[in-house]
Image 1 (tube, rainbow, N blue to C red):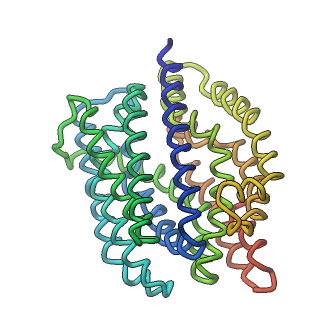
Image 2 (cartoon, rainbow, N blue to C red):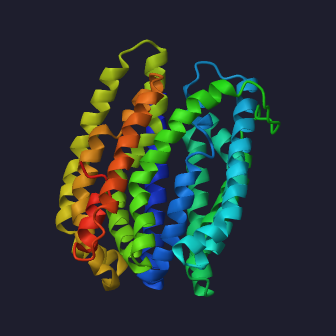
Amino acid sequence: MSKVRRALLFSFLTRYGGMLIGLASTMIVARLLTPDQIGTFAIASAIVMVISEFRLLGAGMYLVRESEMTEEKVRAALGLTMLISWGMGIGIWFSAIPVSELYDIPPVATIFTILSVSFFLAPFISIPAAILTREFRFRELFFIRLGTSLSNLISTVVLIHMGYTYYALAWGYTLSVVVEFLIILTFMPARIRWQPSFRNLKPIASFGIYNSLAGFFRRGVVTAPDMIIGKLGTTAQVGLFSRGLGFIEFMSQILLMGVKPVVLPFLSEVQRTGKDVNQAYIGATVLLGGFVWPVLAVASVVSLPVIRLFFGDQWDAAAPFATMLAYWAMFRTVHWFSSDLLVARGKERLMVLKRRRDVCSVLYWDSSSLSPRLGLRRRKLCGCGLP
């Protein structure tokens, strides 16, 4: 079996295994918590997840793309991620109370504080994982992600039964990050040294700033509606929209995420060997569309019975959102690999410009569709960056 095919096999196992565990977790949590409780967590997590796009500053992708990886580059990448991620973790910790006052939701402060813990472990997880990815060691990554997903599921469900409600979601995520760190220690490449270097950071930062900005804008397209609805609507409305979006994300990423981790290493290798990377990108995109579009077309039609089956009848109001969001997801697949192509070709700036346009559309349409007479449905559709 070739290196790429073996990587694809374990990448599929990793993503699909994680998604099945995630689906089981979502089905259980949806029956244990109300839309209002899930919406409370969604508001806090949306803000933290957007900020998290900057905590690694693209150091992992930098190591994957580099034609030659040296110990100095690895130590510099670790040093940069520690500076950024730890600084953001401290910032999130101290901003917890102001953010909760902004939304007038006191539990957001505690959720913020809990989620900030992951920022202090992120550098020691991302750098070894990037090296494993570069070397196509997806077998090891499979066991790491599997252990992380299982720990998240078990800890979240146990804590909900103990009465922690939305705090259980935050603690479950944080505990899974700790487990991920402990597991990755066993697979860590022997040459990795936990001695960060703060010299020669400019090449990594120059690459990472564009990659992180693109990730920030990409994440913002999905999370901006939660943040805006949380401020101008209710937590229950946030929960309903998040569940509809979560359903479509699950259906689309059944196929998308199995391939995604392999695309950047594959395109980078094609670029390094002097082959036609554009042709490789087009071929991958056409194949992906052929698989994903039929799945999303069916999802748009059967959203109500599927949501009721998976999450219970208290989530019926999320079905109309899921139907509309399915069309957005179909158009998204056309350029799903575009970021990987631009990174492989060293044109990160173009990636940022594209993502910025998407977020500007989200903010404009969300902010201009707030009349109560328009209703929540139109506001969410516009807020998802639908072309």
